[in-house]
Picture 1 (cartoon, rainbow, N blue to C red):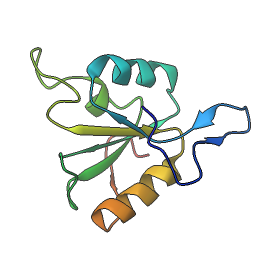
Picture 2: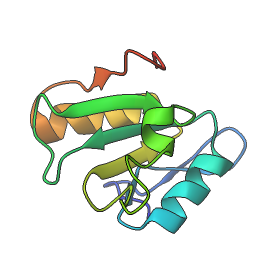
Picture 3: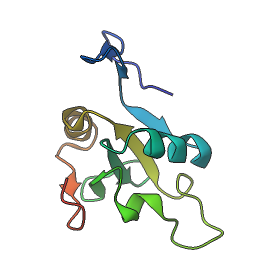
Picture 4: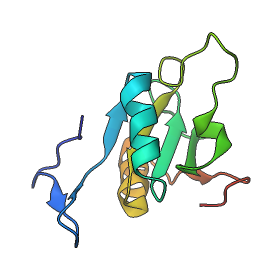
Length: 108
């Protein structure tokens, strides 16, 4: 699901729709990661809270591996993804009042 913007999703230079995705199901989330290895993911609590908003590259193992076999990627933590890092940073500033913390492992 693409989060709607006031002006609607915009087109990238290659005519792909650019928008922020709010994932609530593991299947579409994992598919998005596979389809967008150059994308970014914000991993946060539900609801998002300042100090608990982390920005990752879509290839980072922190957002690609579940903590244990019976866990869900999207149930315990909210996942917001975009190919536009700036869009996720603007979302964080608007939603929690500050920028996301960059992951120290993948260094987005």
